[in-house]
Amino acid sequence: MKKYIIIAIAALAASVACSKVEIVDLQKEISFEVVNSVQTKAFTGSVYSNGDFGTYAWFNDTTEFMVNEKVGKAGSVWKTVDHTFYWPKTGSVSFISYSPFAGTSNTAGTTPVVKADSLLYNGVTAGTTDLMYADRATCSNNVNEVLDSLGRGSDSGFSGVPTIFRHALAKLSFKVMANFIEWTDTTTTPASVTKWEITLNSFKIKGFNTTGDLKLALNTDKKTWHNADSTAVGSKKYNVWTNLSGATAAQELVDAPIVLDTTAVDLAAATGYVLPQVLADGVQTVDINAHIKTTLANGKIIEEDFIKTININKISTLKAWQMNENIVYTIKFKPTASALNPGDAHDDDPEDVIIKFDPAVAEWTPVAAAATIQL
Image 1 (tube, rainbow, N blue to C red):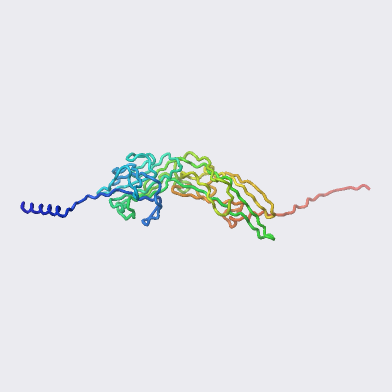
Image 2: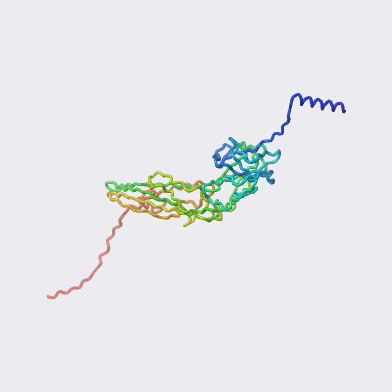
């Protein structure tokens, strides 16, 4: 037996020496693939462009793997900047990412506070920074395989850790236009034409809550998030921040007077992003200063100013500015009070408020006059 064993070993050694076969323990470096809106395998999302982001990771859902590691773009690849990580041989790694990166790699951050199943933003003041958080991704060594909550895999269509970002704040902008700038009444002979010139001199928004908290928790699918403290108004819940405080000063959105037409034009952008919040009377408002010049059908001209503070919750059906919403208000200015009942057949014309008359004759007042003539 010993003789045969020696021969077998010698033959194996000769084989290895001759063919120079090497058994290499391949280990793949972890990289990321990022978008900032919901996408399918066909990739319908937007490419992420918000700079370095932070990520946390857990091995098999329990053991810390990455703690607030900075992820940046190296050439065409997104990877951790300060430390290099490789996929483990077995098991999976779960990732929670946020943007933009804050703090120091390998040191737990404070904005947001990230745990294996939650994201907490505390005392954040909205400004020019787009705060984002990604869906939780659980991946194996084959990064194309993203595991569901039961550990089953499916082809994700990604070549790196699927990192799908959503916006934690809301974005706000305004467009303005005139509903009409002239109206013809065909019931007169000849037809009567009235014209309006509406000049918007100032449009100031103010009173938005600027500081608040957000608590996100994983849904039962262990991938997407829900707002644990969403606010209820009546029977509907709104995906807004809580513990609101602070308020914006007035922001002027008109750079120079604008003569309105029936085509919507953009006002100057509001500052940065707004904190998602429920709209309430007397809180979020707009100050409007406009001038109306009316050329009457008889050629005479009247001019008047329109100066008013309006609750923003009254100018549309929106009850709240919610997370991940890009809110665009298109505000129509009506030069005369058209429509006694908004939404009726004359909502976009002044037909029902043309000056009309309702003539009547007062009854004679009876007077009995007794008189005497002396002859």
